[in-house]
Image 1 (cartoon, rainbow, N blue to C red):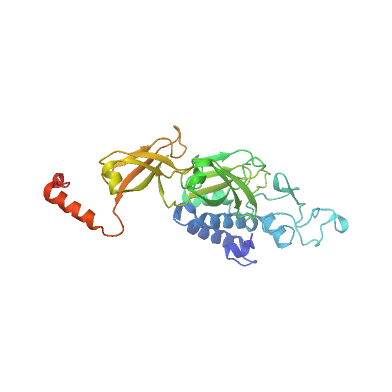
Image 2 (tube, helix red, strand yellow):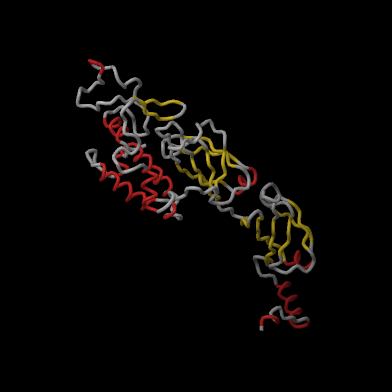
Amino acid sequence: MRDPYEVLGVQKNATPAAIKSAFRRLAKKLHPDANKTDKTAATKFAEINAAYEIVGDVAKRKAFDRGEIDAEGKPRFQGFGGGAGPGGRRPGGPGQDAHFEQFTWGADGFQRGGGGGRGRGGFGGGGIDDILKEMFGGAAPGAGRRTHFEQEDFGGAAQGAQGRDVTGAVTITLPEVLSGTSRRVHLPTGKEIDARIPPGLADGQTIRLKGQGLPGPGGGAGDALITVSIAEHPLFKRDGANLRLELPVTLYEAVLGGKVRVPTLDGAVELAIPPGTSSGRTLRVKGKGLPGKDGAGDLYATIRIVLPDRADPELEELMKKWRDGKPYDPRRDMS
């Protein structure tokens, strides 16, 4: 991740109040709920959260400024807490904190140990959740929503009370909606994970990867929330679990009927066109849609009659005879 001071747009000597103010301003500007059409907003919002995790906490900011942890909160080296300097003091002399602090990075993520620490949000401004609650009112935006598809086992730690969620986004194709797939996702923390995409997801649906978010001082890690977008398909339009397709047919196929090959997401099938089929009529191919709650959806093919590319004198002559000898008005019900 980038330098947290740079992410928040503040100087290294910024006051706690200035840092909190910068975070509030960016959180209001970049929150996904206020930028639903901007697919990059979630990533930017996660980045400023991660930055405030470091410089918005007294102990972590001091550790980062001393070069003891990096921009993700990971120690740059082990064993820098206590007892290393003369008289049992840490390197740096008596001007450093009088209390003992130790930082570790393990299976449970970032942890701070030792006595006398002021705890999370030691600047007196509160943690990220407190700030967001204050800005948006009540619970923090998104809290309590259970519209995510949860994946339980991705090797991460269980979500702790103080862990922070991060966000990411992937785009998959319509055939991948049918069969399911997996994607390598790059998170704002710099971490890359493999996300399993189950069949049948809707456009904009979110997958929750437990334990893949930011660690909290209490040891537990938050989750990664991956928003899935569905790329447009050149032939098919999605309608819930069903698919819709425009099917071009010739004039003689529409008049005489016949069997035509129709593409589906998993191979072509034959569809019977009844004699006398008008353009705009919709025929159903059962079970050739997408996975749904009540089973597979269907494919609906709407007939579109296509005339020859070039003018045909015989066809024109035939149509003149029909016009003069057997006229009919398809718009009689529109008057």
